[in-house]
Length: 89
Image (tube, rainbow, N blue to C red; front, side, top):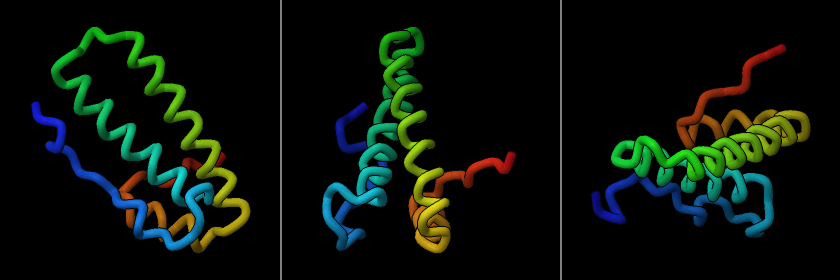
C-alpha cells in the first residue's frame, strides 16, 4: 500500500480560517480515511484503533456543534465529504 493510495479531501475547499469547524472536520476525515486503510493490512493494531475511536468522537462532537450552529453548512459539508449524517435521538 502506497502513501498516496487514498482519497484526500483538500482543505482549500474551505476559504475560512484553518481553525474553523469545517476545516477541522475535513482534517479529521482525512486522518480517518488514512487509518481505515491502515487497518486493512494491520488488523490487530489495537493502539491505533483506540486513536481512531478518539478521532471519530472528536469529529462527531464537531459535527454536532456545526449542526446546532449552521445546519446548512452541516448539510453541505456532509454531502461534500460523503460522510453519514448524525442519528437523531
